[in-house]
Image (cartoon, rainbow, N blue to C red; front, top):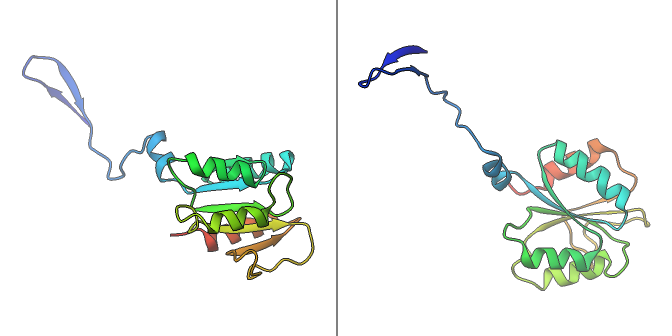
Length: 152
């Protein structure tokens, strides 16, 4: 830093520019990894929203598959990954995946399913997802799964 006299006699302080660019909150939101969280359990949605947001993800939430499809139809920015419960009212995870795969705009979005029901495999032909998590799962397992499956 140094003092500088301008042509009009007003003193100004010159600052050396940092090599790191400044990022506004809006720019961060545009470039941050985005996740659509689809689960009918309001408590779990809230906990996962808080945990994933604290990890730097921009998280949008839906209560069931139909609400998720409505969100995706109107979203200006699509998520890079969908975290999807299987057992939900209105439209379950299987119905959501069928609708998602038939829509060319949203079909490429990777999906990680989470369920407490039985032994689900990611390669189940009805699902065809990137990964499957059995509830309850640890935060470490969730974050590791997201890191491995979020598109780069």
